[in-house]
Length: 323
Image 1 (cartoon, rainbow, N blue to C red):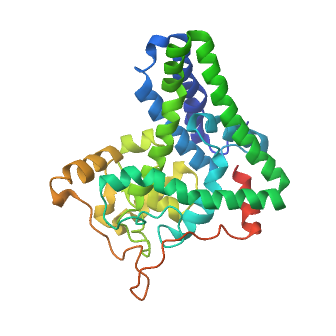
Image 2: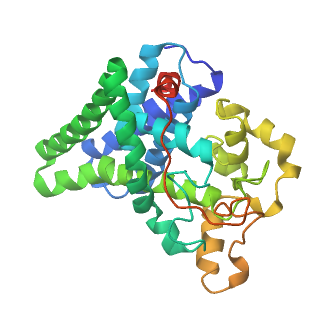
Image 3: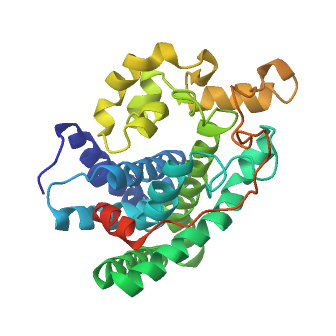
């Protein structure tokens, strides 16, 4: 299991020490259940970030190690990592919040309000299900090996969570066992899925996808990016999708002065407080559209809010290596 980039030693510490350590500590000492829930939610969110990073730039040099790592982080993330390919690689990175993107931020409203940010997970999940189903169908028809990997990931995630629930019940009985499982694995996984989509929403709402550098919102504080493995540097991620996360800060510094200042926020938590809680009472704290809206075509018309095909089967084969 040789790393492609030395910086991922920290990824391994989180994935193989902190992830299982915090979760299983609650199985050993059930009184910790609930108290460690906030830490578990953060770690599950980190697992979501790892699955994203691993999808774009595989962590290990060997295929088997990458397949194992995908399955491992899927358990903590709460969903098979292959789903990033049709919804993110082949769709979101192609359209970047414009018409055709399954994850558009303007599907229900062009305003940026907390109710939309909160509901975005449910709306986006529904529209992402189409590309996922199409991707699975293409894999089943043309790529049996890939199809087996997809099925294996589903079995691993579902089987692991059922097994972990059964273990908690066997160790601690019905009521306490359920609480232990929910605190250690269940609730963090649900929060990770919601949070990663919320992050996508605030990274693109009211940005200008037609712009060279103003297509994404960035969160640039050192602490934010230490905890999120440089996930705050979203502009350079879209412009260099295959680049390892450790290179994002240098790439961001090279273009930071070309990004609109309003798209350079300190942290996700700070932005959330300012835009949604202060903004609910004081309009000056709300975001404003930067440049040309995503929903405005060259002729000024608003396109249909539909999704696009995930592309040809050949594309599917190219990106499948990241699973």
